[in-house]
Length: 292
Picture 1 (spheres, one colour):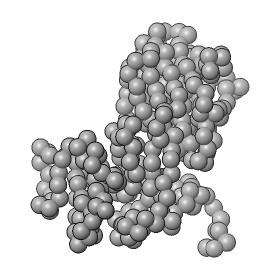
Picture 2 (cartoon, helix red, strand yellow; picture 1 turned 90 degrees about the vertical axis):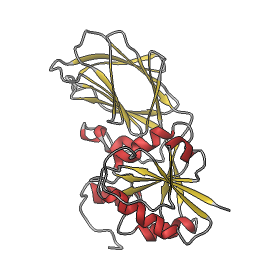
Picture 3 (spheres, one colour; picture 1 turned 135 degrees about the vertical axis):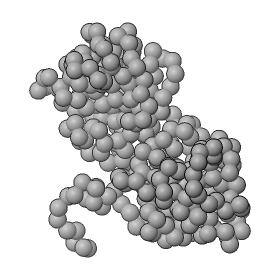
Picture 4 (cartoon, rainbow, N blue to C red; picture 1 turned 60 degrees about the vertical axis):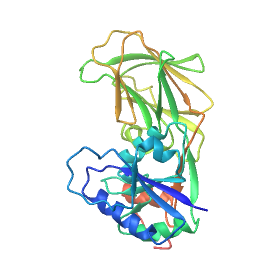
């Protein structure tokens, strides 16, 4: 059976097209694989070479036909790829050419080894929680990492009111609030004092940012719950930020609702990687494992 692979990612990085070329050369003699490339780079003056046998099409047209998507870049590229997939999630392989790599599973250095695992079906799929975020029950935004409400460029504190399942939880006087998934627990939430949460747990984390009350602490809740954030005072520049990439201005009257999406991100996990080892490497944890 023919398998179709879509390649997408951060084409502004110099290594992007080198990785594309390496992927194509790996698969070109394997008749049961077709390589597609999304066309975001078209119309931009780039000094690159793309093999004429690689089909280039729109993101949506590629995804409608594909069995896998290879997201080439850093963690931010993987986050944006998952959001673009919306509720049409297919397995995503993160190929790392950025500065961080909690989500990416491979690099240019061990790419051929990784692709060998792919063609042998020697991998697993991690189903990761995605947040569904609405403002006033209108447009829906999806977040794999986190949804952040903050005071923006204003120096004034943000006064907000948070409910869980329509029950009042707390009023926060702070720089903002982070709602993160387990995947996003190692991001902004961690730097604001939140816990690291194993990615297979079915929970959300609520972390206040620089709270003016010592009693305001991070709280982990079931993903079956839903959260609402409103405001108890005027503000100048508050906004909702999705995965650190989409920023939406807020009004005093706005109500933000956060719940678990009905779909999950499907991240390809390779047998030579594991979450604890990634934490040790990226967070510079000390001590050697027994096998080291």
